[in-house]
Image (tube, rainbow, N blue to C red; front, side, top):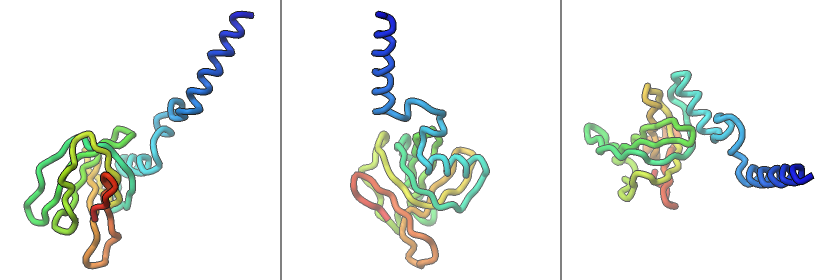
Length: 144
């Protein structure tokens, strides 16, 4: 009887834990957002020119690209583990001056495939009105 009661207590504790944290169970694909799954599919199928929305953690800040149109560049890691290079046009949108490694950022822009995980660009408004406007959201501010 004692073993049965201990088993029931453990069962209730596990149930409570999983109820509060549903992502503790399931396959890795079910643990990530739909946008991470869309980006993984685009990467695996070598697709480009896809509008995507999502979020990630800054894992590396790169030097600005100052050849031609200037771009702020940094690498995000998505919850799925996929990395994504962000090329944010700072001729058309404000630079995020306070961005640091470890920061969380949301994005909406165009995905282009590459072997390292892909590039996100068009994270800004289109002054010509020919492309869907993108953005970056950081600490409550929208950069576009």
